[in-house]
Length: 277
Image (cartoon, rainbow, N blue to C red; front, side, top):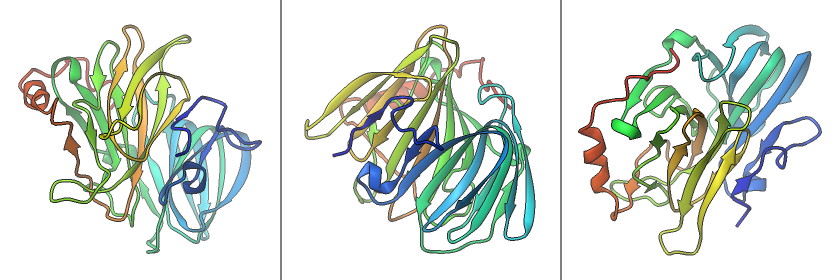
């Protein structure tokens, strides 16, 4: 099994802040590339991977198949939602911009058309209740945007709260669960902030509870994962990139903690959310 926790900088290349491929992760579908640009242009070929270009901060111009798309972007991921661009497999693109950009990707076989989605068209959902209230930006949720295999959402957990709870898994195909590989890419507000993340196998073969810092990534090939904990004073953002043999998000809660889901839903939502609109 590949290393599950990728510390900020450890997944970097000479050109990328972070690079996770199916090969580096030891799985089949999901990938993520974090790119920083300072006004220059950079060329990419999607190859086998359908890709979503998502501004984390800043704006960009993306040239695809003779058309130019302008991503107005945002100042940061905590204060605003953003527009994004879907780029299909077997496509060349040039990104010219100023800022930091996530290229969410998944191995795919069906070539769709490029698609631009404006920030105001992204559905923002406040989910849960009490200390387990979180904000979901469903920009590429399975039921919000058409793609071949790629699923991607943004989650914001306000300081002092938790998300991805109860612990749940999606590593096998059953009547209530689909098989999805998942990447968590964390950003933490504040200069010295950090959070906590928990992941473990149902059979006990691994169990990791770890500090996650700004720019860390965690790979979830299998097993239960959650909670993600935002410590007091520091908001937590994570980008979830998921893909598998079926583009459908269904999961199973850890039976020991499943009762918590109903208890959470019965509480009032945190009035601080949504943080970004």
